[in-house]
Image (cartoon, rainbow, N blue to C red; front, side):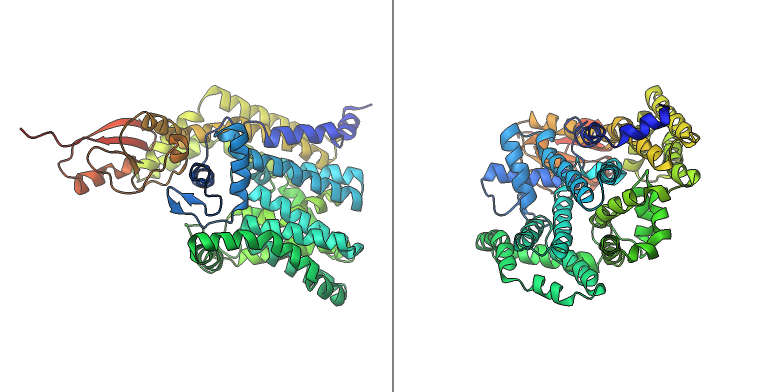
Length: 527
């Protein structure tokens, strides 16, 4: 048996998928500090939920948090109660959800296509760049994508075999997804099923499913109790904050600096599925043929609705596209033999690896043009972190492996790309993320450890790092410090204190990269 035949026989075995799941979602799960702002905010809300005993209305640093509904906080709280408050416990719900998401993809593809296609679809999902990032993040997106996948696959199953139990599961998953993210959990299935069944001339089937009383009873049983509880706890505040601000306003106006353009996801899509960007591009050549097949039509409509909806949103983030990537994973597996061009397959991951190899030089260019002090400090730390021999040797080895796969003529390009996916996983999780975390997020964790040992009030001044409160195990008010207090801030904010606290003596008690802890001394006693 040739080496290429051995690879071909091994790649779709169960142990390969198990290894991919373990590496993608559990390796480094508890060893990296929480990433701000998102991981820190979710984690602090969970910590405060446990501390206060209020499991209805999440807060962050003592203020109501209306960004998301409650399910992710409940899952994180259960994990923390079982394992203790640390990164592993806070991220574990996402890792478990990501594994289940992959298994749901595998099961659907196996039932609707074949076992090899199922294995390939799951591997493409697990080894993709963006899935690997959210699958071990203390955020809501892995849970949401699991529930969306369950919802859509049940919709397809119900259309193929309209059983009452299947329809009720559609509403169950949709209700849980609603408790995770809100209206998008209903809007996407509603529009996709309408277009798909309508295109097949099955309007009555769609109307019968949408106006099924038993289904809506299941949905309301899941969704309504918490909404009633949060209303009784805080009135209309959550409804105004979440539904009006974080849904209507997020779509119609740019929030948190995450603006974009109508072509944003055209650029983002290849990065989201990296290293499979070239594989993704080949799908579009067969779109017309796919339209004739009801399953492939369903998968394309699912992706297209998500792509169009968020392309016209005023707030855009790469992970929004993942809501429509699950069908792409299945389509890519079904059309794997269409990927024949070796340069199209291997050029995107090679470009990414070369960019990572040149990262110290690229950061150096950015540092020379940076004007803000905190940016200069972070860039300087980033240059130091990526200039060591281990980083350079690791990236060089990865480039050599990918280049070798690119010229291996006996190995089908799609199989080679799955191996590249493992290489990318090792590079990102083993080299890039630890260095990024050490530069940007580890200083916050260290500063929290210092502050935790002080018997004085601590505040945060013009810095958004909610993980500081998690590690300090205490709420950190955001305001100007007073004499006798300690403030966490950024290095470029220190000048503010000369103007706003004139004559108040201060001393730096911790400083690393852009993060500073400053103690403001109380006035000397008179007499």
